Image (cartoon, rainbow, N blue to C red; front, side):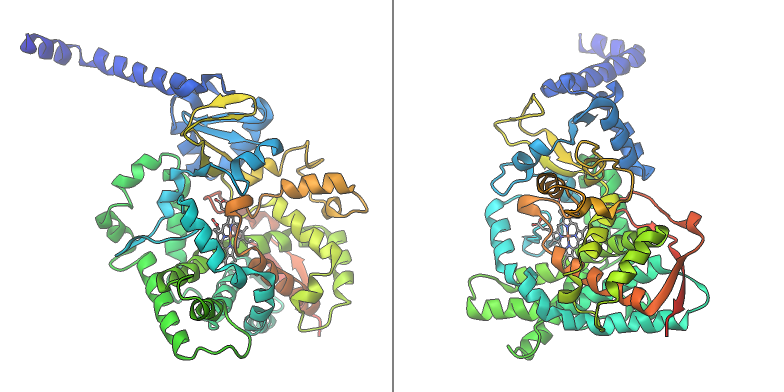
Length: 494
Ligand code: HEM
């Protein structure tokens, strides 16, 4: 009997394979009642088109097109739904939400001898997440920020000096801005930097961060594969080398903590790290060394590429639109030098230019994915079962014409009360997703805004800037959306 069955399967293997495949396709499509959600049929049966879209670095445009065709809720994969509906923001991302981060984030989770490193970016444990948010809140606050500002000053001066040396020839500021952002985030975090602006990637971190970002973008669409890939120590060693990847960054953060502990003082402008050590000295139970290390490491991983992308977007859009350049230069003429964050933060047109540049080109190009809680949820009129992966992609929401009129046009004026009424402005601000939203909103938002608000006026005050070789500007969506080829001619003003 058994032999007969085996004989049947071996002689008819092609049909058996086809039947298995058909069963899987049907299961994918009809599973969990998601078949009623609008979207292309193929997206409901397999993740392959989604993986390919991510691989080609164009998933933001694919997602925008799908939403324009299918509406506010679109099925992007068998268990993956994209949402572009302001009415659903609170339910999914609000402070008290029951939705947690999806398995997508496991791909960037780091582990040490004690287990999962408690990086707020990946935590699904709400209590631990709240503790981590709280124990560094004053270091990320605008109050803490003013203290950290002076640490960025030497980095800003260094960049200006370098650009002066390169005057008269086209300079690709895309890579320079990345070096600047790296030095700046090191400077505010540790009170010292590694002179990326002059020396380049001395710590060999760019390759690691790029690999992680590429990996998240593509394998993040099929996160079950992670356990066969970088989650395996052997594979991680093959990709990053012995002791490579996050381990070296941890080590760096740990040695900075040890050094900072030796010269701890409340005097002078505090760095991010000193602020956390002070919190620990005042209330040892509130934060331990491992948590301090995690925050410091998180700053470098989360705060360099993202800020560089934002800076490139601001410069690209300003240089591409001469009337914006002119208006901005006029506003900057009121600023004293060196430019202070407090002064720059008061300029309304500059604020609008930043907001619009970050709307046009958010640093994160894929959905901020969450899991529907076990009891299920109703989203855009559809009852979704627990465990469905849902999320809003900043690129999609920012191109929603119901929220942002003429969404493909760069128009800073839309953010000013002279053009947009209070109610609509509130709605636009709620849909501004560049820094995420709610419980997991970006902790370092003000650190990056401080960097932007200092370096943009500083460069435009010091140089006449002209965009050249515009066709070389572009980007691939790799979860992060890092642009390349921002060629500029810099002419010193004095
Ligand atoms: C323009 C620059 C930046 C952008 C566009 C940006 C964007 C984001 C986004 C979208 C998230 C939320 C991810 C999610 O919900 O899944 C996030 C989280 C985070 N960002 Fe940023 N970021 C920027 C700069 C920074 C900087 C400079 C730092 C640190 C110095 C930083 C630290 C963090 C941390 C720690 C989180 C995790 C917060 C949490 O989950 O509670 N970011 N960022």
